[in-house]
Image (cartoon, rainbow, N blue to C red; front, top):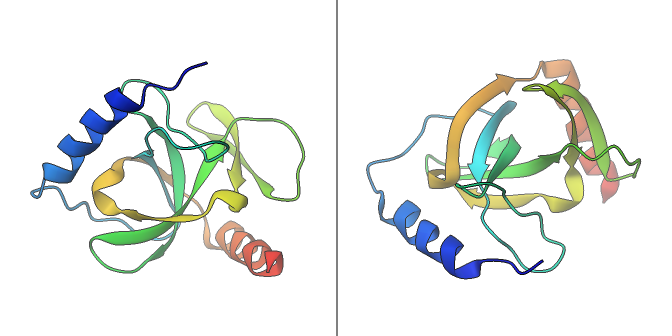
Length: 129
């Protein structure tokens, strides 16, 4: 499958130009995020807006936060953490794909996970190192 980098580049320019959009967000939220089209095995967004659900791991400022994308893949892997149902699908967190994003990429809030589940995620991430 050939990736349409040109279409994503056009969307990315529009996202970057929207200086009026600074969403309020919080750690533990699962939100749609315009991740775009990326290189190789980096996690891509899908659909018209090149989006996928992500969890916000750490907020650094109004403009930047640390996220990890979600997948509906059912395979077992030490870098995939089961989250249960998100939206209407069974989801897993991909901790090997943690990255910093500009909050302009964030979109709709899906849900907020409870503190106990979030603390388990953070512990698993720390153990990764």
